[in-house]
Length: 433
Image 1 (cartoon, rainbow, N blue to C red):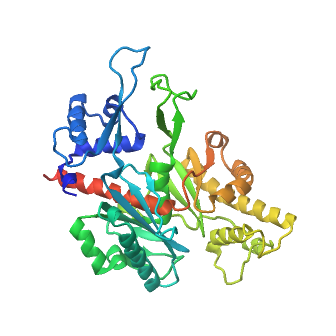
Image 2 (image 1 turned 180 degrees about the vertical axis):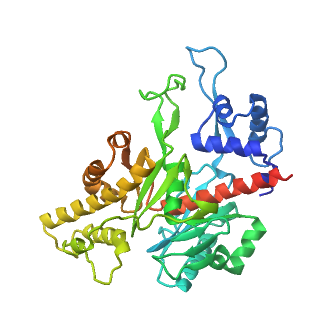
Image 3 (image 1 turned 90 degrees about the vertical axis):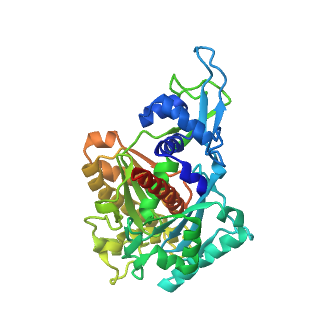
């Protein structure tokens, strides 16, 4: 990482702008950073490696064809060089512990073992299993992908429960009670920590839903469009062969995370909300005013009298997961299935309405590995339920869509957090110089 030490605060600002836009010209960078064009030009030359300051260029440039309708030189777009380095994300979920790898351009690297399988293991039900699985996965990655491990710049963790992001400790998890005061050092062990210290890797930790929100904010909200599209602004480039990227304009987003459980994470003013002192606690049990006795009477919900009320999210997600297996385990009639879908959508929409009325978000995104099934089946019921309880103007301005990310989005978000931690550490270092 010696070449990273040569980057300045302005360099990192420019890299972040290019990351968010995917491709950007100097004018756009100037507007987003507020830095003068002269300083930006110097920094771009630095990042391009033109002066030999860097062993590896961090950005590359692409000259676009000159526009016939406008005077002046042809525009130049800058993008991040992907293979500068990699960031690893490790997601410790209720069901599986998974790895994800992103390159320096936030592109997800296809990560398969020599057998063609994903780097994934069942999480288990005790601490020792969790720790052993993480170390097994890292050992396998080192053996099978040594060239990527050597270019690793950071590792991020996504864990269930309440996370002290500043000190990188999982304080407590109600869904995984054996996770208590679990630090990254505890997870990795002395051998891995020695490797991290030798290579000066950045480390980050956040909870699973917030990591999903980070992935949604930094990667999932980018859509590729053709320059022939009618939606292009007039000052965009008119080269028909070029691909550009447009990110959402929404800054206030609710992520409804549907996996083994149902939880909510918030993006407020373009940032993942963590709360006091960077202390991360997701909204795992946000369901309100649920008639638990009525829920037990609906076929399809396997509810026991011993089930705590606050596990309604788990009951819904788990029941639908079983129904998705061709209804083999539950054998419900069509009417019973419709009742499950209707009731689930109603109570999810009712609970979301409290958040909508309080925060007035612009967008709700369904995320998690069960998002597709929930969107297709529950969207009408959720929308109707929200409409009955939400003020009309807020509903008119609210969009609802499912994620474009994979089911491994928590690990992807954890990897992005490792990058953000790296940026933060260099900015702090430069501040005190």
